[in-house]
Image (tube, one colour):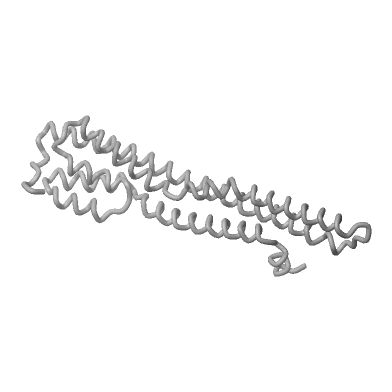
Length: 216
């Protein structure tokens, strides 16, 4: 039996499993590219912004944050925008912005998680349908049953089970890989928030940050 024969013998459930597999790959690649753009060397980025702010160039610092990708740059932008707020208010602003960024990074991960769960179930469904088909053939053609009459259902049952696992296992690995990358970015965000609050606190005490421009 060739690969084309396997595709032909798979049945409708097999094609549903194939579709979920393609969807999992599409979600993984899209999220992977997004997360790769989102993670920057935050320490160097913050050092550059802090140096600019220390010189009083608020607009230049804001422009640098707007140009840089990723959640850390957004946190720094929010901190600059709310630089005149008390420390606790600024902390809450950063927390809210951080939660929003995490939600943005986790977008569509639910699709992968769902595929991990339903792909084996679809394989089981395809297997049961294949076995049912075999039983019906046996009942309708007994006692004159030939092997060719029953192998079709059994083949579909096996193909569905194998396809379900072949989709679920890689999807589970892809989900975990994305989750690990998100966790690393979240750690960067937490450390960046701490550094931002520390810097803003020092500048507030020393009066180093200029007042917010009127109308800005």
